[in-house]
Amino acid sequence: MLGKKSKDDKKAATLAQLDADDIRLALQDWDASCIDTVIPDQLAMYSSHFAQWEHQLIAGFNLLFTGLGSKLQLLQCMECAHLLHTSPPSVSVCLVIHSIDGISLRGAGTQRALSILAACRFIHVVGSIDHLNAASLWEESDTKRFGWLEHIVHMYAPYTNETIVSTTWGSRGKTGAAPTAASGIKYILESLTPTDLAVLRALGTQQLKDGGGMVEYKPFVDQCRKAMLVSSVQAMRNAIACLTEHGLIVTNKADQMRVPYGDHTIQHTILGLNPPAEDDGEGEEGEKEDGHEGNAIAESVATE
Image (cartoon, rainbow, N blue to C red; front, side, top):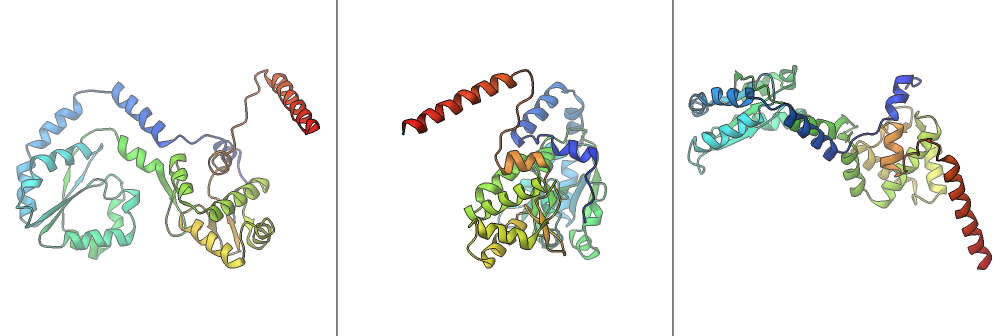
């Protein structure tokens, strides 16, 4: 069961979530303001090891890179400089996987599939990890199949691309990942059927009325049927199953459910409501404008 919201939770719920494009621009601006010679120097230093790492791949090892900073540039340089020439393309394949411990690849099934590929004779895997507990992703059998040869490389590069991805996909739903950035949620909403979208918005509206808590399943189903959002109980179950699959609804064993986002996200991203205007002395003006608009509507109705 969910406890009462703390003051910090309520404040966090009112914060606007940035679009992925806004996050990318902000991070790029930050990177541009912090340019130094450390990253090029580190890249030049590690490039002298490319030939050695190439021979390790040929010997049958798979390479795993750890260390401080993003290793994306290093892997890209390795791919261009040596790894593509390890052996004839028709004979072997080299998979270069940046952030193999990333959110979208953390599933046990995904890691098992990658380890099976890594165990193939003519498939080489080069990966990088950043999470402190990345090793816990792999079971003993997976670790044996990967056959990692670990190298510690400190690039000291900012995690710009990794941050953008992690803010787009975050908390997990029942079976899949739920997007946490506004843009991630919008992409999912665009793929929903009108019925599923209507059910989601109805649940979000009811959740806001209830103060953000769990919504009872049966009364909500009756409410949706009365509003003609769904034609049958089975249609309602299908809608909830789809929304749960996308991580837009979470349920519990007490036949309750809720949208796993803050009030601000529900209001402005899911329901599409405009944010309230700040009180800066324009209230009277707004009331006057509303009054004029109301008079105009009244005159229009009277004319008709």
